[in-house]
Image (tube, rainbow, N blue to C red; front, side):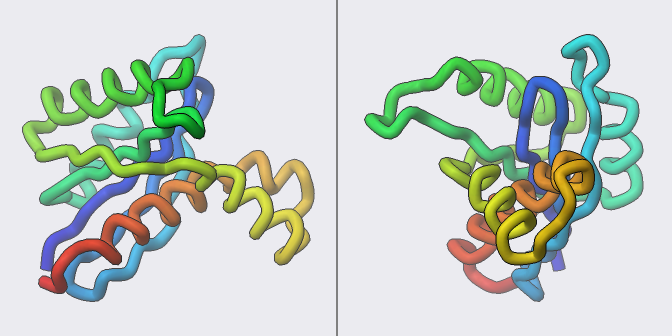
Length: 140
């Protein structure tokens, strides 16, 4: 069994999910809020200490034509900082449209209020990223 953490990076908020390579199931965990556009490293450190992941997965997005968008370099920087700080392997995984999918699922299908949507959409997007990554891995 190997625990993994998934991240949906945003400038204001970072969604976090936890998953297991044995069960191949990801679950939404929390949303870390950035203060003054500074990553919430204290909160992330607590999550790392609690879950002791063997791998971390960071969603990365691109334009439809495959080129970087304005946030792509920040996502890459965040993933490098994660790997450097916690000495844990980090894999980038395509997150194109996961936040959009999370919003649609929560707002349209579950009919979550706008306030609650703002609170949980990023952790659901992190869950979608991590689940998609787990689906590409061999069990165990």
